[in-house]
Length: 384
Image (cartoon, rainbow, N blue to C red; front, side, top):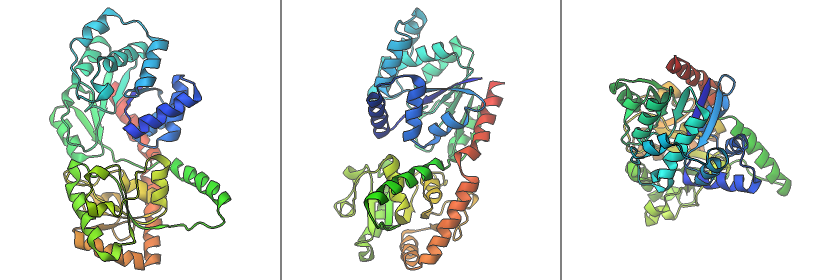
C-alpha cells in the first residue's frame, strides 16, 4: 500500500532542511527524506521511518518552497486541465507565505496525481484548504487521514476519512463531526540519545572536563498568545531571588518576554542544540499554557526520554503517562512549583532517581516505535 505523507515544517526546520539539501546538491526525493530524518526527530519523522516496513511511504515536504518547486520542474512541469480547473475552487486556508499561494496547491495536486497513493496522511490540516481535500477525494480513489495537536485553529474534520491526535479534545471534536478519530499520545525518539552521545564525544575531544549538568533550572519553549498562564508562571519564578543565577530561559519568543524575563534569556534553541540543553539541565519546567487541561505536549517525553528531571503542571491525565513523585514531579500552582524546584535542587539523589525512573518509563512505553502499531492500524482500517 502506498502512503503519501504530507509533511510541514516550522520556519527554522524548513530553513535548516533546505540549506542542507542545497549543500548536498542532491534533490532526489529519497535523499531529501534521509536528510530530513537526520535533522528532525518528531512525529513526522516517526511516520516516515516506522511505517516503511509495511507500507511504501512517500514524503512530501509541502511548505519547503525550494524543494517543492524543484520536484515540479523535475517530475511534473506541465499542468493538466483538470488541475487548472480544480485550482479555481481552492481558497487558501491561511494567509501565510507559501501556504497561501496557488503554487502550493498546484504542486500538491500534481504530487497526488503522480504518486497515486491509496492513503494520504495530512499533518498540517489547519494550513491546507479543505477544498483541496474534497478535490482529491472527488478525482482519485484515496482515503485521507488527518492529524492535529492542541492549537485552537478551525479544522473541517468532516472532509477526512479518519483523524488522530495526542490531544483528547481534538479527538472528541473530530468524532462529533462524524468521523473516526483516535487518541495517540506523542512520544520520544531514542535516536536522539545516540546523536547527543556523538556530540558529547566530539566535545570531550576538545575539553578535558565537562560537567554533566550545567543548568540548574531551565524553561525551553514558546510564549505565544495561548501561553499567557505559562508566561505568568515563569515570571513569578524569575522574581524569586533564589533563582537569580539558577533560571535559564531558551525561547524563540523574545519579543513576548518582559524586561525581567529577558534577564534570564539565553537565546533560541532548535534541533540537536535543543536536546543538548535539556540533557544539561538539572530541572526542566513544563507548562501546557492556556489550552484545555489535558497533558499532551512533546516536552513531557523529550525531557524524560533524554533522562532529565521534569516538573510539569498537574493535569487530569498526567498519571496515565507518568507516575508523579516517582517518574516526574507535578505542581498545581506557582508556589508549589517554586517550593518543589527548590527542594529537588537540594535533594540531588532523589532528583536523579526520579529522572532515571522517568527515562525508563519513556524508553519502555513512550517511544515512536512503540506507537507505530497504532499508526499502522489506523491506516489499514481506514484503507479497507
